[in-house]
Image 1 (cartoon, one colour):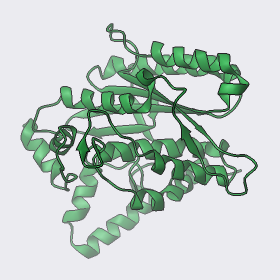
Image 2 (tube, helix red, strand yellow):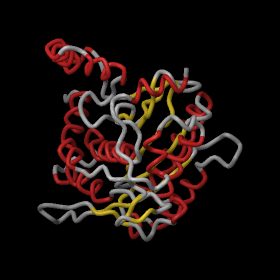
Image 3 (cartoon, helix red, strand yellow):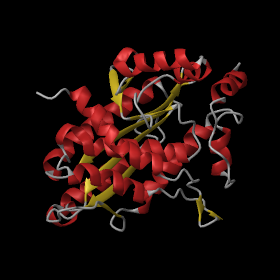
Image 4 (cartoon, one colour):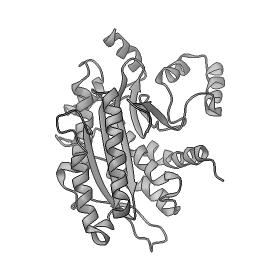
Length: 308
């Protein structure tokens, strides 16, 4: 029987080349013009999801969903958040304290290499981010955190490529319970839910698609502190008969109020709204339309100065 930890490690490794070559441009600049709307790099997501589809591993070991996780983390880094704070990281181990990374950069080269080897051997870090909620530990798909702030962003993702109507009610119950669990402990964090479905639902189960849209809207916080900060829905599809299928995003059927762009805008804006102005400076600059470089590795020191 395959080891699930090894499977997940290998799955993320499949995405590394695509992520390393992907542009890190500001999502609020389009053809040189400043936009209020987040411009997701859908082409990167399409390339990532095409990998498990071509390997016929859409459902096995969650590799398809892990592609979604890797992409959303990439989008948060594009938004200007520090790469060391966003999990899953773009390289192994996917979950690792930024303080350890900062220490590695300060150590003499030989010692740093030895420590790095120990980390890669499993002495530190993880493939999963497990976050304590009010009632239970939750494996959270995309996280931004540091010990001095606690979790600032917690994002749950789900992918559904078949049996839509059969499984939708279970996803709804799970999602609502997870929102209550996480928001009760972290009321100021941006807590989001992002759902990816295969576009075949539009023809095979149109009633299930209508219920999906309704579910995504109802999972949001209506102002009572329950539900998610933001929710989003994305449809994707591919040709099963192709020898080399390519995933494509399908946009028009998804209402704008639950589309990907508004979801990412809301998640970023929530983080910036509840943190001091001298934290996440690169993200604030990019959000304002400036051509700001991504934060360097001195971020941790700057953050602690701002807080203390």
